[in-house]
Image 1 (cartoon, helix red, strand yellow):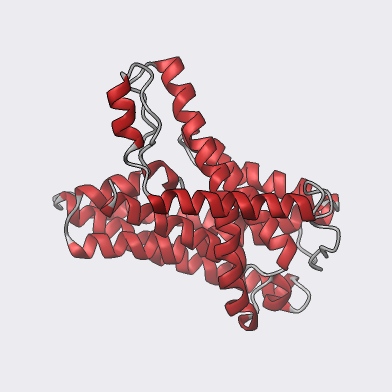
Image 2 (cartoon, rainbow, N blue to C red; image 1 turned 45 degrees about the vertical axis):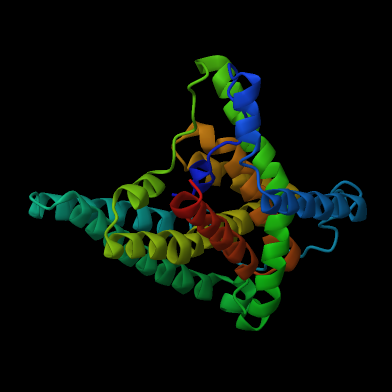
Length: 298
């Protein structure tokens, strides 16, 4: 659901472009793009310097005390994916004559409701298995202001890496598959551009920006990453393992390099801060920026 970086059109020239076409493509890069990239490079370089290339970044990171059985993260995952899939299939069977935009609207409403139910299931499980319950899970409302600002800084810092990986994927894709290769947009980005109805767009934005980031961070960072660290004990290994799971859950392989780097940032922010709000905010900012780019900058 979260391969939204694919909605940003690549700004690198096609392999067979002439010099005038290259200049035309480069002219699309704005001063804002340059500033964001430069700020990100500075923040990332500063982090590398302060942490000895990341070696000391998680030296003071504490594991979250819990008594989760190893299968517990799979329970809400099945509830979420299985429940939503069954509900969507049932509705499509009961109402086969809906217009396309009505079907899209109904599907997104079902996804939102199913996701909210899954969040409630996760909170129930967390309260039963984590020391200090939801606070021990990383949901302490007192940290929200600090996490909101820190999340913006974290996303800025990783943005150059995401950009370079995206452009590299496009470049390699064109070398392998030809100059017409493009990374396919995420399905929700395609729908938000093809369905002009306000209700449909609102439903997609609410699901993609406000609801799904919460459940994905609860699942992949809060449950899977915590469970893996509880058994392995090494924070970077648990971050890498949960990031691979998160990336593999997305079907389009062309999105994987960017998603893996983003997931590593999300996992690191959780381990470093101990707050689940921080990766949630990063995820929200990332999805929101991709939707804005799709609607207004493409």
